[in-house]
Image 1 (cartoon, rainbow, N blue to C red):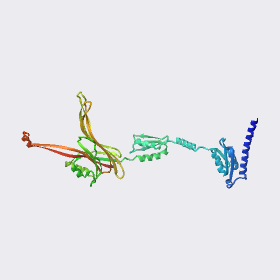
Image 2 (image 1 turned 90 degrees about the horizontal axis):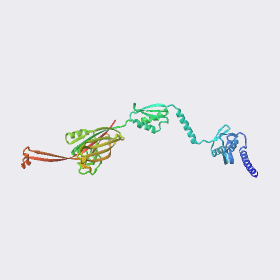
Image 3 (image 1 turned 135 degrees about the vertical axis):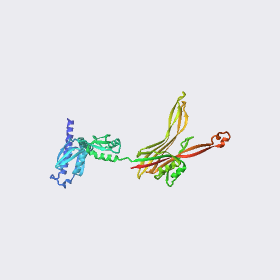
Image 4 (image 1 turned 60 degrees about the vertical axis):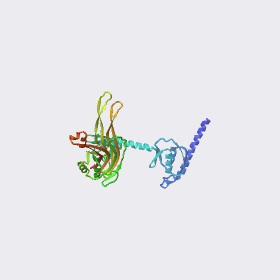
Amino acid sequence: MFKISQILKSLAKKYLNIVILVMLFSMSCWANPKTLSSAESDDLISINFYQTDIAIILQALADNKQMNLVMVDDLSTKQTIKLQNVKWQKALTVVLNSANLRAEIDDNILFISKAVDPEVLLQKKLLEQKELQLNKPLNLLTIPVNHADLNNLVETIQSQGLLSERGKAIIDKRTNSIIITDMSTQFSNIKKLAKSLDQPIPQVHISAHIVTMNKQSMDELGIKWGYTGHSSQVLSKFDVDFGVTNAASSVGFNLAKLSGSLLNLELSALESENQLEIIASPNLLTANQNMASIKQGTEIPYEVSNGGNGATSIEFKQAVLGLEVTPKIIANDQMILDLYITQNTAGRSIKRRDGGEALAIETQEIRTQVKIKSGETVVLGGIFQQINNVSKNSVPGISNVPIIGNAFKNKTKKQQKRELVIFITPQLVE
């Protein structure tokens, strides 16, 4: 019994303190219980609550303004709040924030409810928008494509997030178009992207001449390796040692640039004078940043032994001059050419361990990059060939007589050094 009486006394004392605090608060705030004017609403108040239900604190604030209080949610938290000489609105804000509450005032009614997390509000708004989109009808948009790759265009549209969750983009190969199924609000950005990407790819016409000539012919064309001349400009020079022994030709690639549009006529004139030989004159059309490949040569047949049974077979090895050109168009009718040149020649036959044979191919190659203007010519040289001509002249009959016959026959040897030169002329196609 003693314990119960002690608990009752403690509770009575606690609630008595709360009543006294509320009375003090009311006495300090209700000095004039009439309707407050705008000036009086700015009067400062002081409150002091210790471990008091938040509902009691809010009721005290509402009573101070002679307002009705409506609490939407069950509020059972306790707060300790002490404020000295603050405005009523500030005090209300502090109390609300301490318990994560929010308030709405309608005339003389103060509505109190739990504050909603901004992230929750955002998610709710997004869900509402998504539900609204799901209820919107879908429309069709057909985009004809003239130049762009259909698959790449569809992938770009999807990767850029231009379609809604219900949107689809499919390819119609028959009409070379893209069909979009989506809300009409999505169509504007899709059209803009398709228009910007569906542009014609610039084309480059590449004219090449593969010739063999001597130094005199190169001088007449104005080709000067190693320095700047009147009609040629040296871009770079490469002296390459490929470690080839007993080769039929030596390799030291040189580059120069020729200007002028009479190259075909000049080459034809020199060929008619037997000063050069035009091996090939291929013409190619390629798109910007796409590789064009030119090969000139032959496949060399050789007999291969198949072991100790005496059987043989014929195999082939390519001995070609290869040229790969990749143009990259830049501003002012200029372009950068990525050049890859290979020269393969037949070498000696090599015995294999199994008794067979394999033909060695001696390979020389180089990669380089040249900046050039449309219509100008890049000249590549440095592959030399030694041509040996042997001619015999004799008087029939007498030249075959022993001893004295040598006086009636003549044998001459003539060596001629010629250079393999490649002319490349890129031209932009409008």
